[in-house]
Image (cartoon, rainbow, N blue to C red; front, side, top):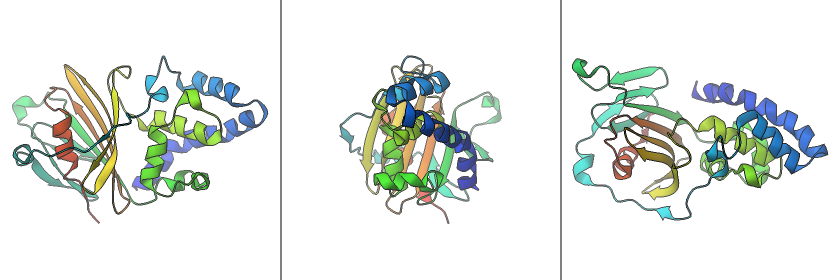
Length: 238
């Protein structure tokens, strides 16, 4: 079901790619960039399209005391431990972790798991670019840059970047990082600006599974170290 969901989400983008193939063949990269900008935004209106992760690789250390405060939860496709006070959602499954008197709390964690090679099926041509798994697909997506777009594959990843990036607050001040955490690696786009923090975590494991953990922290209670502790608990459930 998850693969079908992603195919549905990206179908419009893929159809646009075929239209763009004609443009780039006869008009070149400059016209292609202008065409995409008119459709999904430019560096001013959607800054994330022209930004890339920092070169520094984060190697976080997990605080065992904070890890011990997290509540283990299991879904049909994955398990994770999360802090109290958040609504936890995997696709259509929702679990609420706050008392009724806090029912107006909008802090939420959204979860998604994709099985190995799920993204390759969206656009098989990426294999010609050496992209063989979910991690390489997400790496290419995170480094997609509208200003550096040169061909139809670049156009695909810029468009998919706009599709895959949820609300992360003020994109102009948001940070993009890459990390390695034991057998997990990936990228986090985040914004720390009260009254809410946002964390868009794109994580791959050694088996090739992909996890997206999107956190809308309306109380601004979490920092990046807390988030690393949360994603360190990710496990696939088969």
